[in-house]
Image (tube, rainbow, N blue to C red; front, side):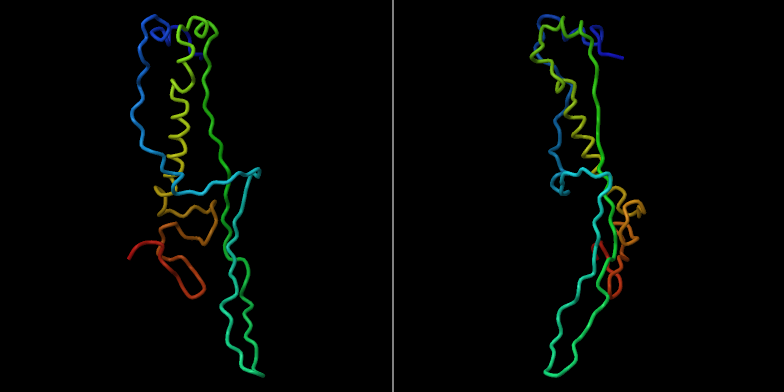
Length: 160
């Protein structure tokens, strides 16, 4: 249903001093934690590979050390997400509006809605950090696991 004159009656009357309803917001946090990039693909992968170890001292005439364990280890899947939100407003509500320059989409909190969406999505990574998500791929362990495998055993992704 569209926003009509009845829904914004007081916004149309003379004497409007201000439009309120939005609380002070906490500064954006997710952009301080996550790296972003543009993607045109439905699915993007990052592959963790095992590189060759440090070279070994070779004596004259001695054998060369070989390590054939290099190659693919874990695959991490990234699927880009989209967010959307809009509203419809009747032509009569726009025509009758005495404050058209002040009545922009931001007055209804559209920008805030998108900011909150990305904050909640980013926080979900940490809120679910103790649960492994097979759709994400990787080493088969949750982000805060104490058993992340590597070549010589396991390591903990938590504090001691």
